[in-house]
Length: 129
Image (cartoon, helix red, strand yellow):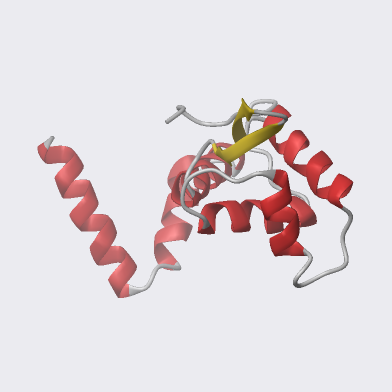
């Protein structure tokens, strides 16, 4: 996978429809066409095919979606997993939040015991190589 989608020095969040499209694509296995995402979305909302097509094209131009041509259509898939996207957002927050040590300290204060235990386990694994 790619090392991270960076826009203007940081991860750029999604617009409202972009979030919905990315969620649909993350929930799918493999690739999807605009038509498949459109059919899925129109079950829950009134939306135009061209709106979905433009949104997916924009997400591709921003680096969030990869695509390849198949016949007359494109097959799309997320450039990052949902978890990699979350990690990029966390990295961005750490970079933008002022003193990284204080940001991390405040973050740790907000963690549950289970989350803190997971973090300790992952840190130990990372240290062990």
